[in-house]
Length: 144
Image (cartoon, rainbow, N blue to C red; front, side, top):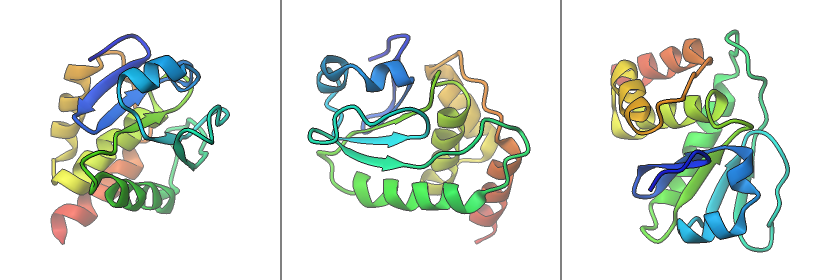
C-alpha cells in the first residue's frame, strides 16, 4: 500500500512523513505497531511503541552510532511477525529514507546501491542525504 504519506517497503517496514505519524486511521489501516520518530512529536504514545532518535538532515551526518542503535531496535521489533514499523521524518524523503536504506543493508545484506534502488522503486520521492554514513555501515556489514 502506498500513499503520499506512507509507503510499504517490506511487509513489516514502512517509510513515511510526519503527516502519516499524525493519522491514527492511516497507521491503523496499515497495521503499524511501532514507530521510529526522527522528527516531530509522538502523537499516540499509548497506542504505539516509539523509538525517538533525532538527527539533522545534513549530508555531513556522521553519527553512525545513532543508525546502529535504530537498526538494533528494528531487529528486536521485526523478529515478531505481528509487528509493523513506520520510520518517519518530516517529509519521508531524506532522514527516514536513509534509515530504511541503511536497515536493508544492515539486515538484508543489500549493497547500498541495491537498497537505494529498492526503496526508490517503492517511494520515488526519496532524496537521502546521509549517504556517507550509510557507506560506513555498508563497509562494516559487507566486510564482516
